[in-house]
Each structure stands twice: as structure tokens, then as C-alpha cells.
Amino acid sequence: MIHKKSSKNLLSLLGAERGVAFATALVVLLVLSLLGTALLIVARKEVGISLRGKQANQAFHIAEAGVEYGLNQLVQSSGAWRGPITQDLASADSTETIGSFTVAAIFEGLDGGLATYTLESTGTVTNSSAIRRLTVKVEQTTPLWSYILFLNDKTTTDYDFISYKSSGVYYSDETTGSVHSNDDLYVYSIANGHPIFNGPITYVNSYVLGGSGTPYYSPSPPKKVTAIQFPTPDYALLKSKASEDDNLGSYSGDVSVKLIKGTAANNDGTIEIVTTGTQTKELGSKENVLYVENGNVYVQGTLDGRLTIVARGSSAGDVYIVDNVRCADTNLATSDDMLGLIAENDVEIFEPGGTPWGKGPHSAWKGGTAADDKVYVDALMFAQNGHISYQGAGSWGRDLLFVSGALIQNRDTATISKGVMGGGGGGTHVMGGKTGYLKRYNFDERLAYTQPPYFFKPDSSRYRISSWGEGS
Image 1: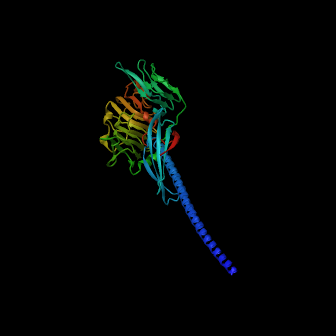
Image 2: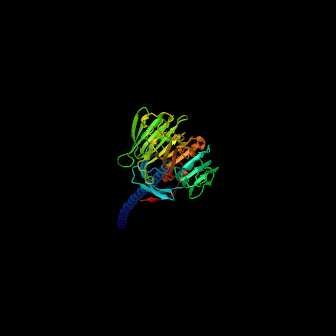
Image 3: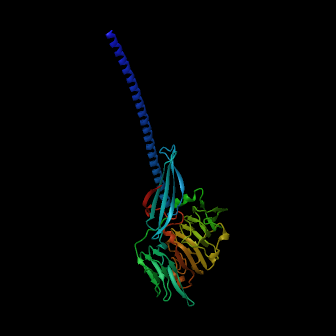
């Protein structure tokens, strides 16, 4: 009996131990379950943190791509681009859009005549709240253009600037801005009257001073320097821009152009383009380019906007100014109007009372105000292979030619005024008939930091990033 009782107690004890073990197992299982759940939550959080970190990093690099895009636009437009623009970015295999950036440029002002800008770029990731904002400071390092007159090849002994006396009155050419010749420069000054130079004069070979007087030099007399590279337009870029859907187009043959001032806000002007018919297009605030191949361009009017006109052709390629060409806002220091005239050959101021060399498609536009005594041209003019001249300088006595902008010419084989930019007549008309125009040349200071649309070849070395930071 005692044995049986002991066995029963042992069985009870074993049963009790099994119950405790089972309870313990349940507790352990619960703890492990809770621990697993916690670990899963932590893992999920870590995956979320990692994903958000990855997306934030993606947004940063997308914003960086926006900065690179904005900087390239500044370079291509020589400081004129402002934006804003939004662009999507595709994956490496181009199967999906990974995000987008929005970038804009802000013109902050001038430092020593050179521009400073702020690029603001925002990067976002598709299907994500990730967003990064970068603010980058950009500085211009060198001027885009510095000369009111740039002469590359002096092929005659005609005087480029003069003074003279007629009926007791003294007359003289006047310039404001730098004058440079990659060759010789000829100036004639009478005793009690003189050409006036408000700006440096530089030359490469010789400075020839005729007459018994001394010109007025400020800040200093002419200086001999080394040659400066003669610029070359990027015709492929200009044609490409002109041919874009919202631009002015590319044409073949002679074209007449009339610029028409807007009626209200800035940059609401229009342009009439005449070939075999007439088109009227709005200029707006974009970078306008009109490109003409195998033809001449005849231009007049008042520009309300930004425009470059190009004339190309081996036997044509001339730009004729047949009437005043003005900017709507003639206070150029604050104006947003800017005109560029590029001729593969010559830029000609129309001969009064006659017919231009060549035939334009709109005869009613030939020879308006150019027959008067004063002509105004607000433009950067460029004659790549030829000269800038006045057709009737050897035959007609005019008064004043006002240029606000700059003149760039390769050769001097034609006359522009009483003091010439070269060529024709061996200088006899200068001291004899005193025909042509006296010059009033004023450099457009904006050309140091901006230009007419795509006028000069883009040069990334003119800009540098000075600082960058991340905004909120």
C-alpha cells in the first residue's frame, strides 16, 4: 500500500511539472512572438528609413541635375536665360520616370561690370514625398564683349575717325567705349578741334595720327597690344534655334523685316517678315532668331523684345539698314530689348534716294529715314567677312550716325562716314567733300554680361560656381 501511494504521488508530481512546462512554453512562445513582431516592425522601419534615405539621396542628385541644366542654359544664352523650367528624368533604361527638377536663374546684379546669378533647383522623386532644394551662386569671370568698335584687318590708309572745320564750325567724331584694331588705326585731328575718345584705344601694328591737332583721349592715349581673336558666330546653333517650332524660322533668299513696337507691357512687340508673302509673328520674352541663307536682309523699325537676325551667303549674306532701327526702351542700361545683326559679308546703311545693292522683296520699305540727316541704330552689328558701311558716304553729305551697341567688322574696304571705318576714295572724300556721317558711337554696357540671342559662341569658361548650399 505504501508503494502504491508513493507511485500515485509521483505521477501527480510529474503531471504538475508538465503543466508548469506547458505554461512556461506558452510564455516563451509569447515572448518569442512579441520579439519577432518587434523585430519585424524594426526591420520594416529600417527598410522604410533606408528607402526614404535612398529617395532623399535621389532627390538631391536630381536637384544637382537641375543645377547643371540651369548652368548650361546660362552658358548657351550668355547670361540671358531665366527659366523656370521643369524637366522629368528617366531611369537608365528609359522605362520609367524617376523624378523631376525645377530650376530657375535669378540675376542678382553686377560686380565690377560682371554678372552674378543665383540658380535655384528643386528635385523630387516619383511617388515619393522626398524633395531637395539647392541654391547655387554663379559668377561671370570675363566680359562677353568690351568694344564699341572692333576692326580686324585694316586694308586702306583712310582715316577711321576725324575732325574738321566748315564755315567756322568744328565737327568731330565721338566714341564712348573701347576701340580696338587688330591692325592699324588712322585718326585725323585738326588744330583746334579733335575727335573725342571716351574709352581706351588699342591697336596691334600702328597708330597713325594725321593733321596738326591732338585728339581727346580718356582715360589715356592709344596703346599697342597683342592681337585679340576675332569672334566667329555659331551658325549651326543659330539656325537650329531659329528652326524651333516657337521661333521665327529659317528662310532662303532675300527677306525684309519690319520691327513693330508693342502697345502695353515689355516684350509684346511683333515682327513682319516679308518674302513672297507677309508673316506677322509675336516676339514675346523668348530668345528670337531669324536665319536667312543665300539672301540679304533689309531691316527697319522698333524692337520690343530680344532678337538676332542672320544673313548668310557667298554672293549675298548682307544686312541692309533701310531706316532707323531702335529699341522700344531707349534707356539701354535698364532695357530688356536687344538686337543683334549678323552678316556673313557686309552690314550696310542704306543709300538715301537710291536703291540698295541687291533687291529686297518689299520695295516700299527701301530708303525711309536713311535719306534724312540723322540715323539711329540700337544694335550689336557684326560683319564676319566684310565691313560695316554707309553706301552713299562718297556721294552724299549727311549729319550724324548714332550707334548704341557695338560694331564688329573684319575688313575696312568701304566707307561709313566723314571719318571712315576703312576703304574707298583713298581718304580724299574725308578732307574734300566731307560726305557721309559723323559718328556718335556709344557702347551698350549690357554687352559685357549679356548678348542678343545666341550671338557669340557659348563659352563655359566665362562662368564659375562660387558657392552652393541646400535650402529647406
